Length: 91
Ligand SMILES: [Zn+2]
View 1 (cartoon, protein in one colour):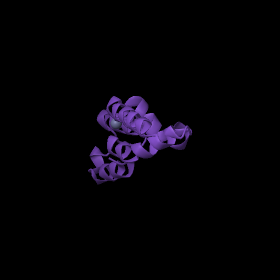
View 2 (cartoon, rainbow, N blue to C red):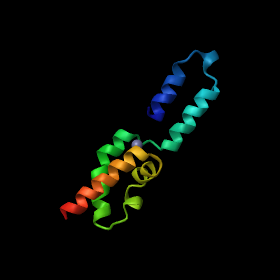
View 3 (cartoon, rainbow, N blue to C red):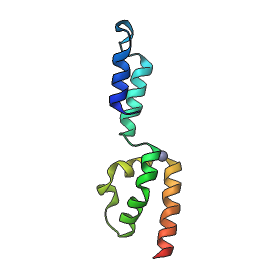
View 4 (cartoon, protein in one colour):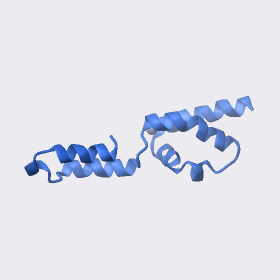
């Protein structure tokens, strides 16, 4: 969920319920930690990221959000490593 949708949802609640609960705070923290990138977005950008890496350019600096996600998500990281493998063999 995007942060803006999250706030919209919060705004729709009855006034009495609008206070942030612990769950809301946890959701928000989790959201901020993920920094707006989810696995699907990483999946869509991962070939671009790998190509940058293959060109020996600084992929982490050019696509920091993707880099950050790969550091913390083993599923995406596995996919990325597999893709790097394939690309390395093709070159
Ligand atoms: Zn992921």
